[in-house]
Length: 595
Image 1 (cartoon, helix red, strand yellow):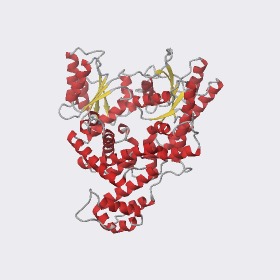
Image 2 (cartoon, helix red, strand yellow):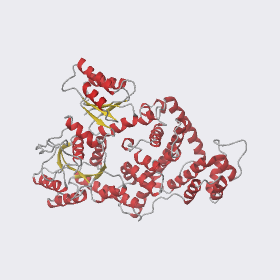
Image 3 (tube, helix red, strand yellow):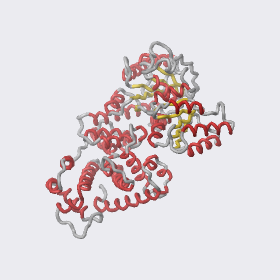
Image 4 (cartoon, one colour):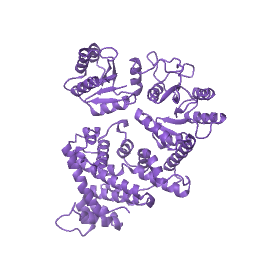
């Protein structure tokens, strides 16, 4: 399914994209002119849009006028009928006159902001864009979902599916009606799907499939269900496989689905013995990455061995989450002086009070003196006392430098065998921190949190992973047959949640936790904060620096949603990257290499 999303508001476009990309490819336009261009392009290429969502209230040509224009294009190009897209009008206020005018102009339906996945699924089924009536198995164990009634999605028997040779057979288990349909729309890309609305129904379907000689290769299993929850269902499925003498590693690949990204919920999934987990809301791309990961964790092509590796990896992820969530293994802690400094600053302490604290740590005091006399801050006279150094630096820079030293100590604590990874992380985090500070300044962003610290901590989860992996390997808990760097590469996809959980333990402000958690999936955030946008851009900028093209000519960087939202021009990006390079050169003289 191909969707065109038209809305002049960046955040609304991002949220609609997060909903619609679950069903297929999405293109976005911020005004009518861009929308008409994309619409004509799709027709010229012979791949027309299946769905168009139009915001009613847009400057210039509004949604109703754009609707008229699209329908005229269809008539003029003979695109009426089967090739005609379903057009859904989007409004923040269900004004009767606007909606009547939209239907008269030829829209197919409307939806009121904020747009939820459940409502969108209902609209798409109603319009016949995705299947609905033949998706659900009938029976007393498939009760209607919340809010379903006469206008809900109908349930009727699932037709028998003839599996092609080698085609995946997938069982989808979820008590929520809309979630089952959404998951089926996605999983149809990977094989033949059977749906179950309860744990008991899923267990029976799983057993019958084994009896028929056509077992399910994959199970998408909701964690939180009434009566029999996902963990109980998983246990029963593994018991059934044992009854049928299914060899270890050759059973179904089971992916748990949870609505929460909290470490405790994810640990519950992994402790239950699943092969993978996924957090709602999910997209086709997310599921594709998870499926690819399940199928490529062992390069031998031997399913039995691959299954053993998967189980070991699942256990390792569970161990790491339990360590992070529990108290049995000491986690990295911020130095006590960092905590005391933050407390003093919150109380409004003056320079003299800060000096009394910092002079007790000779390494910090000497570092601050060195910074005050560096090229950045050097005045007409050389600084010779800590009080004068602090006065020259100011409270914001004092805090940054002390936090910087504290973070560096965390990096220094990792074992030398991870030196290459740690050095790379440190350099990237430091570049991102400077990029965030310069970006916020050049874009005139008045953020609620220090952009430098936001950038410095954005990858803290990777460091925590390495720290825990280091401890686990030294205790021999995981054996010696999985190299440390391979483990790190595998687990790095989980670092946002690890980092967010650690910052919660450190009692960091919510802006830091949200930024770390959604830095790689900003469209899934409840709101796209300016802090998140700055870090997303700065992270991309840091990755692009040192590439073949300068950042201001990097097309991918220029087209980022965060770049557009921050209204950064190529000239501004060039200025930001130049200033970041200057700062990094200066910092090398102060910090040198980690090792």
